[in-house]
Length: 281
Image 1 (spheres, rainbow, N blue to C red):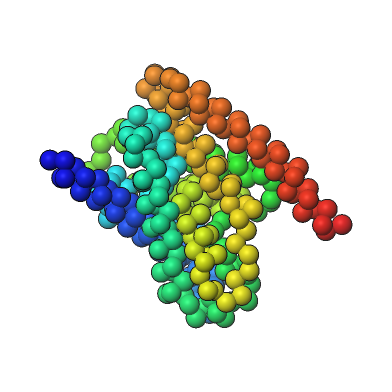
Image 2: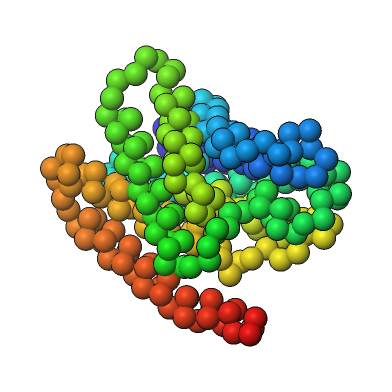
């Protein structure tokens, strides 16, 4: 029995790895398809990207949901733990599997579009395939955007889970939730709403031999990590408090976590953004 449980736990991690790789293959793939030089889809607009990410999530959930719950997102994993829907002992292993899967998905995107990456001159376009960035650099505003997007993501997933759907329809509804977030809230920071979705491909961008790729902008990478984690935790804790009528210590922890992230944003604005601005003078 012990060996069976260990094997099942391993299957869960493999499922998260595979699911996140699928997510990035289709998600980063649609960004590459729309933006890279020479692509037949170049010039398609934001709505294509938003639906591409939504379908990416839906298919990833269809693929591995029965094995691991298809979190494919550290913020979802943490949020579900805050909501009491997931074991805390599995949080770190799930996150590691998700980040590694995201790196593999990013590698497959580079492999598929290798010729286009070679011809593309813009460093920002190449990085944008893999990682998110802000429309207006401001750590407080950018943290806030990622928090709000992930807050509604995790709360939305809990809403969906509280309803009965025709068998097999649930992953499609989750995909539409992602699409809605992208269409409504995505233009500020590119709606990472998923630390693995940003950090794994960003790290892959740093490691892969992409011609003329430029820097991987790790200075910004803290935003799509801490913002979604805080937003996901807060979304789950608020859901429990308001909709289940069971506020607990996790709500206080989530609020403190959120405030600390925003305070960090103020500090980063003063240290990093002010320093960058002074270089331009």
